[in-house]
Image (cartoon, rainbow over all chains, first blue to last red; front, top):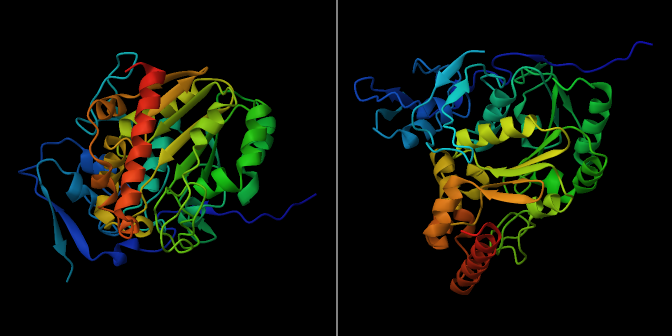
Length: 80
Length: 308
């Protein structure tokens, strides 16, 4: 018996380019960074890689990384 | 599996004396899902799946997470996932475990507070009673977030929601205590503000055979009316003010976690936690005092249980 099922497949960007939602973009200042990886750990999306690069295509700009950064190395800059 | 060494997310030894400071690099929730900006439930799920690893079968009940997965035919979940109806998440986990008998494969059921505390409680109770080998994760944003923040059994006293605009008059249901009364092998409470603690609890839970339960408090920025960047901070305030306790229970023995032990010694006033949230802005002075008294009674209870 063949059963019809609605199967979704894992895709990056399942809801489109969520970076378009952003109002403020996080900018990491590598000089001030102390490599504690708080931004990587607390990013809800996983857009900040362990190499501390931000994927601006999918970053929603929530600002948790800037709020949790102990050395204030992340600044939220307004998008133009 | 590639591990990332993390320095200071939340640094403390667990009760066996181990430091936990490495997390898996693999992401099982892909970028570009439809969660709100600053959703702490996504932080929690991200770390739960990182700790569980690739050999995991996930069941998602009707909750925010099922919406966050994205639009058919795409999904953000990089693990085999079954979306279930509201009332039967734990029952379907029993069914999946009957089919997947291999102990190496973890079965994780995920549901929100509505799907656990109100609607799914009979299925959860039944699955625990049948001794199903699975981990049930209840992420608690203290209202029906997905349908527009209606009051649930888990909404705390005094919180205004769309169905209780002048503040809820009843107390929050203590789901952890209800599940603990089932004589469950392992049960824990966690918060994504302490991610290493959360990962350690998931790993400990999956190493034990039998039903396991994890209650995670996840602040919801739009529902709690806080700004998107404050979700993690508010979760930390909830633990520090002792309105939420982090503990684990193994065979009816309760172990308080380090952040809560520190908080119980010197708790911050409850007002500091409530005043940052817009949903408590209409709370009167008497109600605030009443809530503080309830928290004090809870602290006294847990002091007696753990002997702190």
